[in-house]
Length: 135
Ligand code: NI
Image 1 (tube, rainbow, N blue to C red):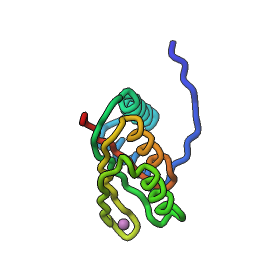
Image 2: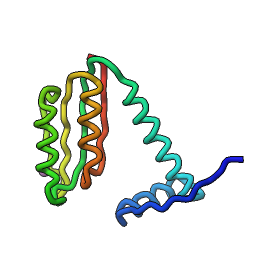
Image 3: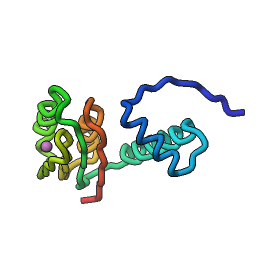
Image 4: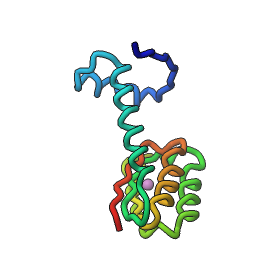
């Protein structure tokens, strides 16, 4: 028998609302099942990314809230730190406070992964999507 572990997780209200709407639209019977599926996708994606090796090229697309104090400075600092693999950055002002950035990258898979992790784990960064191909 599979053992179930209970954990407490906090959500920004808007994210929880979006989650509940999506759960409703998809017909999930419980929030737990939907969150388990989302976590499974996240883990699978991250494991796949971590298995990549060698020279790669791609685009990291991130959405962040520029109102979060210090975030833009941190993101710029991270990009300067990894300038050897960044070819170009496209910035799009999405709304009054949301920005989208597409970072074109080319280099060792491990370096691209490090950059993606540095961006994704910052508070105020809502999403980072990586599309990586062989170069
Ligand atoms: Ni902007």
